[in-house]
Image (cartoon, rainbow, N blue to C red; front, side, top):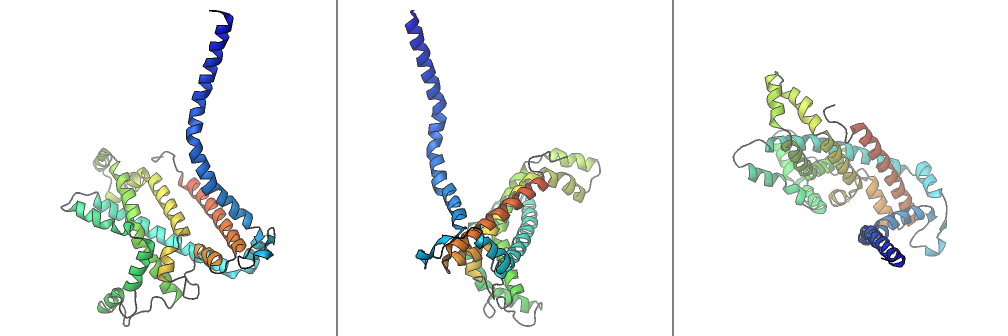
Length: 310
């Protein structure tokens, strides 16, 4: 074989190697382009608009204001702080109750009993119901004159008169939390059932032989073994609850007197009703940063991915 042929074969091999290396990037290119166009660019655009005065009804007055929107939010906007406090209460209470009830239901549904399949199917129904529909259902159930909840409260002697759930901030927030808890329990139940089924029965048998009580087994074996699942599910549900507006819109529409207006709903109203794209973008940017910080701290505290039995 001549020297020219050897050089030609070497170049051909190099071209083939480059082509093989390029194949994964070519396959990923459509997904990357899609993510850039429909995810990254909208996010970047929101942060860009947050530095502008941009009211859709005044297109010719659009101009750059720098940190003006952010300064106004932190110094002149009491609704922001109130909605942020409402969001914190809404998210913390909802997720905490959902976690406890979801774990309890998952533990029950992993036990063997007759008709377990049917009970499992019915227990997961709320997760399939749209948020708007959940709001309508609980609006009817919590109605002052026709709601079944008030009828039960009066019949069992818990209340002397039928309360008006949507006339005060405390009752309205209670109603919203109850509806959200009802909707979110199946998510935790499904996740915890899967996690619990992965724990070996030998661990519990060994614990029983050593004299460990049921509560000791729960806190020393069960919860540590599914800690990663707890961290992930609570974080995901907190993010979804933080950003969701469908249930609140259909149940209370943020009332009474903004008593159930969360930060996400405030952003939506500023954007859609007021048409203030710049100010809404600044609120959305702050909301994004808040969730990123909370998620980072929570993952660090929850020690996600580390030894569960440590």
